[in-house]
Image (tube, rainbow, N blue to C red):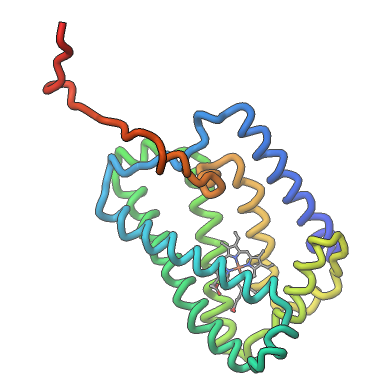
Length: 229
Ligand code: HEM
């Protein structure tokens, strides 16, 4: 089981992610978009989207800091374990809460506007549910588990296991003793990456640089615009 979850499944996930993106790019370039729904409702979108995007961006930075940077670097810099975890709970907690509150606003918005609901595909609902689970569990780790028990030292377990995946040498035994909520958070994140290529999430990897250079598109209302004959 350990081998499956911590060695085989991560590589299956990456394979589905990469092949899925290649297939989508080849066959559905016109559908490669965030598919904005601003036209249906603006106010809730503004707050939900701002909170969600800034929160998730900060949580992403938090994952780099906590998982990709080895604990020895912190010790070398004189940052004690206690200092690190206090910072992680405070900053990670704020980031995680912002992302969750934003996502809840966006979900309620989708559920309560009939036109928007009609415009929501199965992939959109699946994305929402998976994100709610992954972010909800992440927040539970940071603000629940860490606060009511002693913070679990994922920098000597999850961190080295995850970095091992990049050099094709992941050690499954590092993951055996970690709390269940961490395990479910990570496995749920595999589901997120597996569905990623088939959802509107693909917009994350397309930075619209051309948008800054291209000529502005002018929209005219049909009533006012009368072509000269
Ligand atoms: C789609 C992918 C993922 C999302 C959206 C996500 C989201 C989150 C969020 C919102 C938090 C709480 C806020 C924070 O501490 O930053 C969190 C915490 C955490 N996540 Fe993830 N996560 C993802 C993948 C992963 C993966 C792959 C790992 C392990 C390799 C991981 C390990 C952790 C750990 C250890 C914490 C606790 C951090 C702390 O308390 O200091 N996450 N995650």
